[in-house]
Length: 405
Ligand code: DWN
Ligand code: SAH
Ligand code: ZN
Image (cartoon, rainbow, N blue to C red; front, side, top):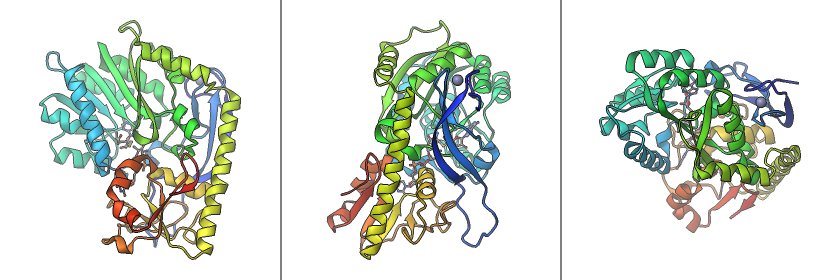
């Protein structure tokens, strides 16, 4: 039995999503070199409950100069981060010469608002191409992995931080012990560590198994985050449910005893207990839903192919790697995927080798059906694509169920 990455407990495997490629390793179509793969299996700690991958992918394979994802591709997410940056400016960043560090700042979407307000900041992210985009906008960045030594270094240069913030990044970091040890050095005594990540409760509720891939090492809950924080001398002092990225929680963590936990913490912990979120039965049931979801989607795609319908993917998401490779979907069932990210265009998807193309300029050249891989941005996308729908175009979804509408 594997050991939990956080505590001394053992990991019990409840889900096997098969051999998988790196989710963001889009390839040149001519590249015939062997592709790195790893077994994507998920387990839960029998002690602290933390849901985590059974096998870790070396971080340099995933996060490097050419990491293709850019936060700014979603207008909705740009607004989300601007709103939260403003909130932090009005709350945690009001003291004397406040300082905020962002872990996983990517293209600087969140820090842009902080920098415009003239507040001291530093973004840390190993995706060199993305941080270059941020630097070009005048945002202060360090192209690096955040870990204990980085934190100590920042503390020595810039002094202690009021806030360390991260979105969709802490769940990417197996070495949480090093992160917390770094925070012990970097945070002011009353400083806070705020991070938002996909929520296990929403993943189980929606059956959104595509939130599981190499980069998403942890699937957090209030219960497991509270346990982890406590282990490293911190406490969970606030939680907030978020609708973005298919359901997330924003966790606020402070040094033990530094802040009084809000009622939202006990409320979410109670909800998780009442729903038996961490029970073995719940997790095994989720694994069954995943199998059904796979069979349902493949059936729909086969039927449409038989009927001679045209189908394409909408959004070459990292999440889609899990769906495509777990379901065995290749270009005979799905001939192409459209995506607005320049670094993904004219490449093929990892493992399944489906061509990724820029969107056709005219809606007339759209397919009859779009398989919505970027389902987490559905509100933004369906609003933008009304002409497609009005012309009779249909959406194929696989979260929270397989359906066509
Ligand atoms: O956690 C992570 C999140 C924040 O971003 C990372 N591990 C990797 C990445 O995951 P993802 O690729 O699943 O994220 P998204 O935001 O669901 O990706 C959306 C994709 O769809 C992007 O490639 C951009 C594309 N897109 C598009 O073509 N048209 C997105 C929108 C909104 C659009 O209108
Ligand atoms: N915060 C952005 C980007 C999320 S993508 C958003 O919410 O849209 C995850 C980012 O985390 C990538 O840019 C990746 O390079 C970065 N990352 C991964 N491990 C990291 C680490 N140890 N320290 C800092 N950034 C890291
Ligand atoms: Zn554990």
